[in-house]
Image 1 (tube, rainbow, N blue to C red):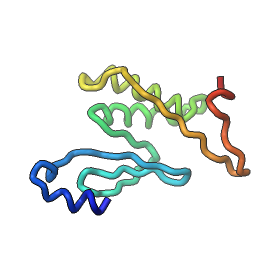
Image 2: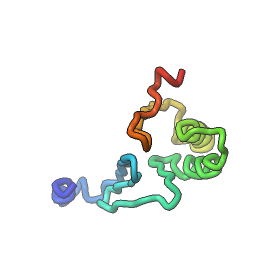
Image 3: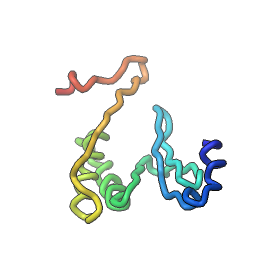
Image 4: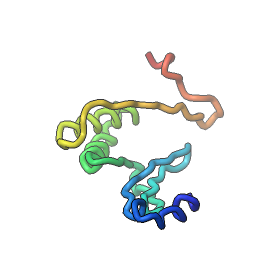
Length: 113
């Protein structure tokens, strides 16, 4: 990240407006184009033109006990794409299995279907 920030002296990169979401089993963070590292107060993160819509939908849906985190994400993106003219419905989902407290991994995609 420091190398990227040093390279920002190039006039084309000075106003880079990019964000990157990073996560592990303990924390989810957003790294902005300015190098700021942000953590959400409610564990909901989104980037892109439709992110305000997706965040609002996810915050509303995360209290529905029947929905998994993946289902909340999918429904939130659908809602965002319906509301934001710059967001389309061409989504690519990548679901990561995380280890549970007892050391076992969660169900894989094959086991869920």
